[in-house]
Image (cartoon, rainbow, N blue to C red):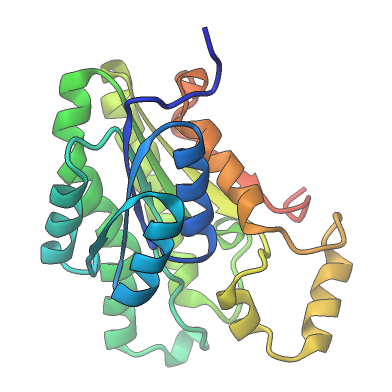
Length: 242
C-alpha cells in the first residue's frame, strides 16, 4: 500500500490563492487530492488554480453566502482547510466593535460555517479531515494582535470540542499553528528590516518558516496515516513555543 496518498479525496482550501493556503493546496494536489481553492480576488485565484491544476471559486467566507458558494463548488468535501487572513494590529483597548465583528466573521465564524457545510457528508462517508490554520499567538498572545489572539484561540477550542463529537465517525479536527512565517502578512507587520532581525534572533531555528513547511504539516494531518490524531494543535514555529 502506498503511504501518504490522497487519491480520490476532494479538498477545499480557503485563502488558497497565496501564502500558506496556496502552499497547502499545492501539497494536497501533489498527494493526489482533487483540490478547490477559494479566495476573494479572482485574478490571483485563477492564476494560482491554473498553476496548480486545481478548481477555483471566488468566495468571501466571512459571509454565509460565500461559505455556501465555496462548499458547493468543491462538491463532496473530504478535506477542509480553513485558512483565514489575519485581522489588523492594534491595541486591545482601541479595537472598534466593527473590527471585533469583522474578526469574528472572518476568522472564527467562517470555520464554524465551513465545518457545518461539510460535516454531514464526512460523517456519512465515515472519513473526513477538518484542519484550521491558526497562529502561535494562541499559546503566546501578541500584545498588538488582540483580535487574532482571541479569534484563533476560539477556533482552536471549537475544533477541540467538535473533535469529541465526530471522532467515532472517522472525522478528525485539528489546528496547525504557524510561527513567524515568510508571508505577505509578516512583511506587512514588520516593515522595518531591523524588526525581522530582532525576531529571528529570538527564534531557536534562527530564521522565519516557509509556507511549504506549514503546508507539510497540514498535508500530513489530511492523510490516512493521521487518522488517530484529533483535537490537537500542531505548532510549526521553529522552536518558538518550547
